[in-house]
Amino acid sequence: MKFLVVDDSLTMRRIIKNTLSKIGYTDVVEGGNGVEGLEEFDKGGINIVLTDWNMPEMDGMTFVTKLREKDANVPILMITTNAAKEDVLEAFKAGVSDYVVKPFTPETLKEKIDSVLKG
Ligand SMILES: [Mg+2]
Image (cartoon, rainbow, N blue to C red; front, side, top):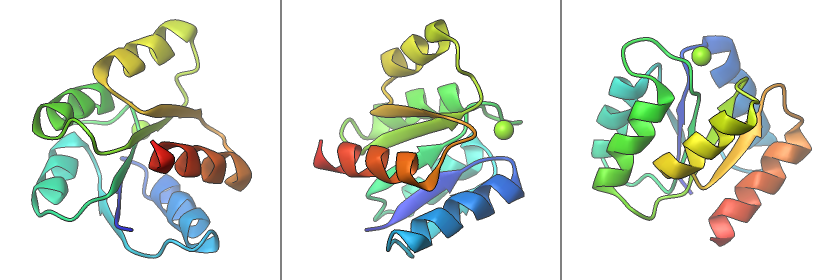
């Protein structure tokens, strides 16, 4: 199971990677913004994408929109501080599979990952 983790915060990427490792997922590639995320995705083999919203260069919403043009099915989990209901709705409209608000617990992240991987 290969993960793509996209977040402009190195610390957040580390937290997510540590959490993934604790729940048994160690195959992880990273990007620091949407542009890097698309580059990594294009290399192939990604099974699930975890992305931040607020990032420089290309934000998460644009990233998700572009990713959905390439791949209609890959599970995308948005992990963001944007907790407003309109933001959540906008993200679902753009094509995310599910949504996690920061800060999150490892249990929440695991539940959401299990859920989106089941489809
Ligand atoms: Mg950010």
